[in-house]
Image (cartoon, rainbow, N blue to C red; front, side, top):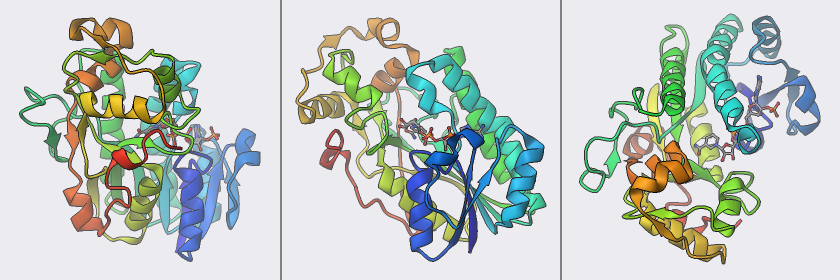
Length: 311
Ligand SMILES: NC(=O)c1ccc[n+]([C@@H]2O[C@H](COP(=O)([O-])OP(=O)(O)OC[C@H]3O[C@@H](n4cnc5c(N)ncnc54)[C@H](OP(=O)(O)O)[C@@H]3O)[C@@H](O)[C@H]2O)c1
C-alpha cells in the first residue's frame, strides 16, 4: 500500500516508516523543511508544515497515499518550553488534524490512523476500586487544571475529526505512556533525569495508575491499524497497568538512582505540577482488550517491569 507518515522524524514516526517499509509498503515521509536532514529513509520525502493548509494539501496530494498516519506533536519542546509545547501540540491536534483530514480526502486516501493518548480519562471515584478503564470512559475535558483541560479537549477534537469523516475510515490509537528510545523515560530523557536527581518524589499512597507502552509496541500496533479495516478508538497499552507506588521505585532502582522520597499527597500539585500529581495519585490505567481483539495485536513487551529505565 502507499502510506504517508506525517511526523516522520518523531519518536514513533521515525521507526514506523522503517517498519512499514519492511512490510512491503511504499512509504512517503512528511517532514518540515527544517527537519529534512532528520528524515528517515523512505520511498519519498514530502515537505510541508501541517499548520500551512495549502502546503499540506499539495504535499499529500503529490504522495497519493491510500493510508495517512498522523504522528505529529510538539512535545519535543516539553523540556525547554512546557507551555509552548502543550499549546502547539493542541493546535496540531485540532487545526493540524483538520488540515490533514482535508488533505487525505483531497488526495483520495481511504484511511487515517492517528496518535492519541490513553491517559486522558476522568477519574471515577477511588482509583484503587476501579484502576483500569476502557475506551468508553469519559475524557477529563473538565479537569481542574486549565492546561490539562485544554490538552484533553484537543485530544477529543482530534478523535472527533479522525472518526467523523464519512469517506475516510478513521482510527485513533490511544498510546499508553511511551518508554524506550528517545522518550522521556530513555536514559537521557526528562523523566529519567528527574528521577536520578531525586526530583520525582512519590506522593503518599502512590495510587495513580499508569499504563505504559514501549515505542516498539506503538509501532507494531500502528502497522496493524494501517493494514486493518477496522475503525474506532483503541487503547494501545501494555498488559500491566501499575500504581506509582510500584513503578516509580522499580524505575529508580533500575536506573541505580536514589529511592524516591515520599511526600504528603496534598503537596504534590505544588511540588510536581498538576498533571504529574494527578498521574501519580488519581489517574486510571487503560485496558487494551479492544485493540487485541479488533487489530489482532498484542504487546511484545507485556510489562514495563522488563525494560522501563533499561535503554
Ligand atoms: N503517549 C505518550 O506517552 C506520549 C505521546 C506523545 C509524546 N510523548 C513524549 O513526547 C516526546 C515526543 O514524542 P512524539 O513522538 O509525540 O513527538 P516527536 O518525537 O517530537 O514527534 C512529533 C513529530 O511531529 C512533527 N511536527 C511537529 N510540528 C509539526 C508541524 N507543524 N507540521 C508537521 N510536522 C510537525 C515533528 O517534526 P519536526 O522534526 O519537524 O519537529 C515530529 O516528526 C517523547 O519524549 C515522548 O515520550 C509521549
